[in-house]
Image 1 (cartoon, rainbow, N blue to C red):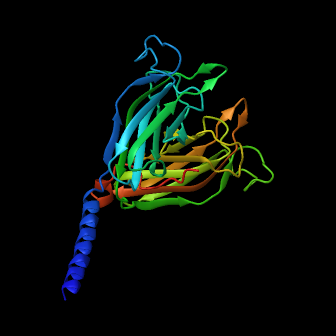
Image 2 (tube, rainbow, N blue to C red):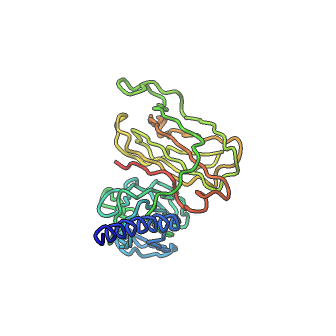
Image 3 (cartoon, rainbow, N blue to C red):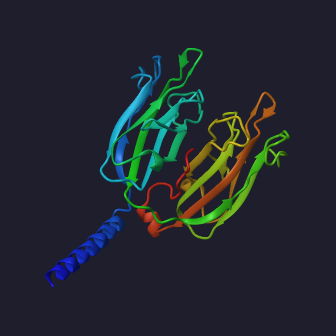
Length: 302
């Protein structure tokens, strides 16, 4: 009888522990800030009079951070200025997260925004993010970093409503590429209209692209540039350019439009392929809007 009673107590304790853990998880859906770096920090190999700061601290910026739980979700965002070369890299725990988009050649204009789901790259305990500047012909790219934040949560966030889903693939450019799918371009841009049936508080975009060779392929929503596609492998079958962004400032209730345009250099257009484009949105006052700060989507970084 005692053995049965103790076993029952143990089972009840386990049930209550699990329920308590679930409740705690629900109460902590708002992501915890595990790293905050305001900057600005200058990395590179030259002193730039008039910039803030003028002298570089080194060829890379390394920031350690701790996550006091096993993260289910983690997101990174920061701003960069004067990104001139196309291989300035962002790594977490030694794994490449992304390359910085080329922006205006001005140290006071922070127009390169990186927003990424870094869930696959982090873990409980000690972590490290490293941003390194690119080198070409012996010269390093001097760049400035500020407002770097990493948030993490032990729970999955409630998803937003899918307001646009485009499977693709779509080829945009000006040349036919035998063996690629599709081989013939549909035009110099991809335009996709979409409707949001409520006033959105949050909205997120994710897409994959292949054979991004030039640095100025742009993503715009409602006439405003959201960002540029990162240069990757020159192969139409390898979808290794991942674009993920908080597009809340660019959308509104009703009719919206996203446009992806291919870059032009010396009279030639960059032929690129687009697939798996998704936009999700959450209405004002919704659970998803209140309890999350970054993308509901989880990028599959390869």
